[in-house]
Image (tube, rainbow, N blue to C red; front, side, top):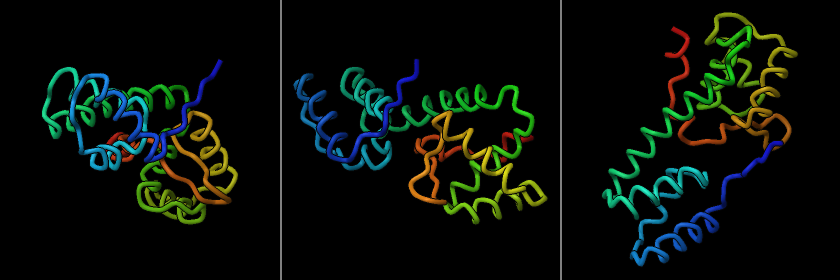
Length: 162
Protein backbone atom coordinates (compact mmCIF):
# COMPACT_ATOMS: atom_id res chain seq x y z
CA UNK A 1 0.00 0.00 0.00
CA UNK A 2 1.28 3.46 -0.87
CA UNK A 3 0.29 6.68 0.86
CA UNK A 4 1.33 9.89 -0.87
CA UNK A 5 1.30 13.09 1.09
CA UNK A 6 1.44 16.21 -0.99
CA UNK A 7 3.15 19.23 0.52
CA UNK A 8 0.84 21.55 2.40
CA UNK A 9 0.00 24.90 0.90
CA UNK A 10 1.32 27.99 2.67
CA UNK A 11 -1.98 28.41 4.53
CA UNK A 12 -2.17 24.72 5.49
CA UNK A 13 1.45 24.84 6.71
CA UNK A 14 0.75 27.90 8.82
CA UNK A 15 -2.40 26.35 10.30
CA UNK A 16 -0.49 23.12 11.06
CA UNK A 17 2.31 24.99 12.85
CA UNK A 18 -0.12 27.31 14.64
CA UNK A 19 -2.10 24.40 16.00
CA UNK A 20 1.04 22.66 17.23
CA UNK A 21 2.44 25.74 18.93
CA UNK A 22 -0.97 26.56 20.41
CA UNK A 23 -1.16 23.05 21.88
CA UNK A 24 2.23 23.68 23.47
CA UNK A 25 1.08 27.08 24.76
CA UNK A 26 3.84 28.78 22.76
CA UNK A 27 3.83 32.11 21.04
CA UNK A 28 5.37 31.89 17.57
CA UNK A 29 5.40 34.38 14.69
CA UNK A 30 8.11 33.26 12.26
CA UNK A 31 5.77 31.18 10.13
CA UNK A 32 6.84 32.58 6.76
CA UNK A 33 10.53 31.91 7.42
CA UNK A 34 9.85 28.28 8.31
CA UNK A 35 7.31 27.68 5.55
CA UNK A 36 9.47 29.26 2.85
CA UNK A 37 12.40 27.06 3.81
CA UNK A 38 10.53 23.78 4.32
CA UNK A 39 7.99 24.25 1.51
CA UNK A 40 5.04 22.58 3.20
CA UNK A 41 6.68 19.17 3.66
CA UNK A 42 4.73 17.71 6.59
CA UNK A 43 7.63 15.68 7.96
CA UNK A 44 10.00 18.65 8.02
CA UNK A 45 7.35 20.90 9.59
CA UNK A 46 6.77 18.26 12.26
CA UNK A 47 10.50 17.86 12.93
CA UNK A 48 10.88 21.63 13.17
CA UNK A 49 7.97 21.83 15.63
CA UNK A 50 9.54 19.12 17.75
CA UNK A 51 12.99 20.71 17.76
CA UNK A 52 11.81 24.25 18.41
CA UNK A 53 8.63 23.72 20.37
CA UNK A 54 9.40 20.66 22.46
CA UNK A 55 13.20 20.52 22.67
CA UNK A 56 13.51 24.29 22.88
CA UNK A 57 16.13 24.87 20.20
CA UNK A 58 16.29 28.48 18.98
CA UNK A 59 14.58 29.07 15.62
CA UNK A 60 17.70 29.14 13.43
CA UNK A 61 19.26 26.18 15.23
CA UNK A 62 16.05 24.17 14.81
CA UNK A 63 15.92 25.00 11.10
CA UNK A 64 19.60 24.07 10.67
CA UNK A 65 18.99 20.78 12.44
CA UNK A 66 16.00 20.03 10.18
CA UNK A 67 18.19 20.64 7.12
CA UNK A 68 21.01 18.50 8.57
CA UNK A 69 18.78 15.59 9.59
CA UNK A 70 16.62 15.95 6.51
CA UNK A 71 19.66 15.76 4.23
CA UNK A 72 20.68 12.47 5.82
CA UNK A 73 17.18 11.09 5.39
CA UNK A 74 16.92 12.27 1.78
CA UNK A 75 20.34 10.85 0.91
CA UNK A 76 19.19 7.52 2.33
CA UNK A 77 15.97 7.71 0.26
CA UNK A 78 17.98 8.57 -2.82
CA UNK A 79 20.32 5.66 -2.16
CA UNK A 80 17.29 3.34 -1.88
CA UNK A 81 15.99 4.68 -5.18
CA UNK A 82 19.34 4.20 -6.94
CA UNK A 83 19.92 0.63 -5.70
CA UNK A 84 19.83 -1.75 -8.61
CA UNK A 85 19.52 0.99 -11.23
CA UNK A 86 21.91 0.65 -14.13
CA UNK A 87 22.60 4.32 -14.80
CA UNK A 88 22.81 6.08 -11.45
CA UNK A 89 24.73 8.94 -13.00
CA UNK A 90 21.78 9.72 -15.30
CA UNK A 91 19.34 10.06 -12.39
CA UNK A 92 21.76 12.23 -10.44
CA UNK A 93 22.36 14.43 -13.49
CA UNK A 94 18.60 14.86 -13.96
CA UNK A 95 18.16 15.82 -10.30
CA UNK A 96 21.05 18.27 -10.54
CA UNK A 97 19.56 19.74 -13.72
CA UNK A 98 16.21 20.20 -11.97
CA UNK A 99 17.86 22.53 -9.48
CA UNK A 100 18.47 24.95 -12.37
CA UNK A 101 15.89 24.25 -15.10
CA UNK A 102 12.39 22.76 -15.23
CA UNK A 103 11.39 22.28 -18.88
CA UNK A 104 11.81 18.85 -20.47
CA UNK A 105 14.11 20.08 -23.26
CA UNK A 106 16.26 22.07 -20.82
CA UNK A 107 16.51 19.11 -18.44
CA UNK A 108 17.66 16.98 -21.36
CA UNK A 109 20.28 19.52 -22.44
CA UNK A 110 21.59 20.19 -18.91
CA UNK A 111 21.71 16.52 -17.86
CA UNK A 112 23.33 15.57 -21.19
CA UNK A 113 26.00 18.20 -20.57
CA UNK A 114 26.61 16.86 -17.05
CA UNK A 115 27.07 13.26 -18.16
CA UNK A 116 29.02 14.14 -21.28
CA UNK A 117 26.76 12.78 -24.01
CA UNK A 118 23.25 13.34 -25.33
CA UNK A 119 20.50 11.50 -23.53
CA UNK A 120 18.04 9.62 -25.72
CA UNK A 121 14.44 10.95 -25.45
CA UNK A 122 13.04 7.62 -24.34
CA UNK A 123 15.76 7.19 -21.72
CA UNK A 124 14.99 10.63 -20.32
CA UNK A 125 11.25 9.93 -20.26
CA UNK A 126 11.80 6.61 -18.47
CA UNK A 127 14.11 8.21 -15.92
CA UNK A 128 11.70 11.09 -15.24
CA UNK A 129 8.84 8.62 -14.84
CA UNK A 130 10.88 6.57 -12.35
CA UNK A 131 11.74 9.69 -10.34
CA UNK A 132 8.05 10.69 -10.31
CA UNK A 133 6.93 7.21 -9.19
CA UNK A 134 9.44 7.31 -6.33
CA UNK A 135 8.01 10.70 -5.32
CA UNK A 136 11.29 12.58 -5.75
CA UNK A 137 10.02 14.89 -8.47
CA UNK A 138 6.66 15.95 -9.83
CA UNK A 139 5.33 16.97 -13.19
CA UNK A 140 3.33 20.20 -13.08
CA UNK A 141 2.20 20.47 -16.65
CA UNK A 142 3.35 19.18 -19.99
CA UNK A 143 7.12 19.22 -19.89
CA UNK A 144 7.49 21.10 -16.56
CA UNK A 145 9.13 19.23 -13.66
CA UNK A 146 10.41 20.09 -10.20
CA UNK A 147 12.01 18.48 -7.19
CA UNK A 148 9.31 18.08 -4.55
CA UNK A 149 11.40 18.28 -1.40
CA UNK A 150 13.36 21.49 -0.75
CA UNK A 151 15.95 19.60 1.28
CA UNK A 152 16.58 17.22 -1.61
CA UNK A 153 17.04 20.28 -3.80
CA UNK A 154 19.96 21.42 -1.63
CA UNK A 155 22.04 18.29 -2.24
CA UNK A 156 24.95 18.45 -4.69
CA UNK A 157 24.07 15.39 -6.74
CA UNK A 158 27.15 15.46 -8.91
CA UNK A 159 29.36 14.99 -5.84
CA UNK A 160 27.54 11.70 -5.30
CA UNK A 161 28.81 10.26 -8.57
CA UNK A 162 32.43 10.29 -7.41
